Length: 303
Ligand SMILES: C[S@@+](CC[C@H](N)C(=O)[O-])C[C@H]1O[C@@H](n2cnc3c(N)ncnc32)[C@H](O)[C@@H]1O
Image (cartoon, rainbow, N blue to C red; front, side, top):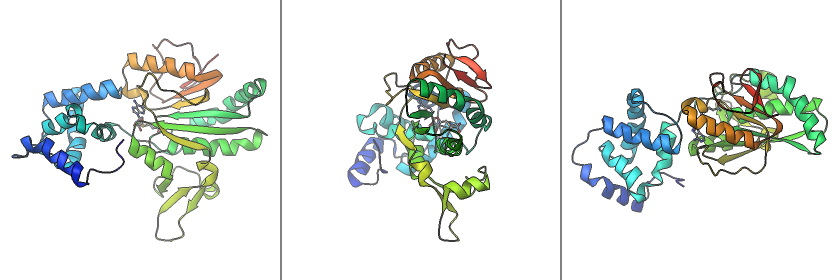
């Protein structure tokens, strides 16, 4: 796992050696062949489909990474990452650069309203029936943490109406930089814009410095969330327990139908009977073989 940039001298030396064949002339344009290498790797390991039309986007994002590491051409970089065993750790950075991490607090709020107004009462019944103490929730593809923190705010608020109910949230993503941001739980004033003022006052901690525009998530939220690295493409991924609700929103949109179907089947298995799956507004499961029943807009339930 890469935890720091390759600025130490042995790493730097390895990198220089790997790139020396291509260091005489700088050409940071991505050829069709190189684009095909990137798409093949990302499709296979991450599930994200990168059609040729995304070449300019991929080139722009990767170019910054090449410059940072001192590579003078894409071939040198791709050989290093995809062929050279010494470059294996760089794969995480390649994935980080390619994934789209757009997210927001209270994004697609109708789902949180559905959870509070419909699903929680149902989940409360099943929890009582099988004698469990708490609800298990999973934000799969949590990006920089805004989704699990929103879930935690909404659940904390709802707990007033469900005496004795507790919850915890597993937040996973493939991107290590996203997970670091989520675990740190520090956001800018602009980031927290969608959060109603009374909830900001209740759950967020403000910096004491008046010129500092950073806000930290409070302990009532942080204590309910565990951030973990998990690749949804990994067929062998294991979870600590089955889930009452899974939020996997705006993640499957980048996968093809075959991968989505496999993933939905794994979500079905991961859900407890009566559990809910929430998917993004453009990710309907229409046309996907599943035993989950649609119970609301982009809300599915295991029977
Ligand atoms: C657009 S964000 C969505 C974030 C959040 N769920 C939301 O709706 O606001 C998609 C996230 O899925 C993650 N992702 C993409 N492929 C993944 C995979 N194979 N395994 C785990 N996470 C993945 C990306 O790293 C990214 O953070």
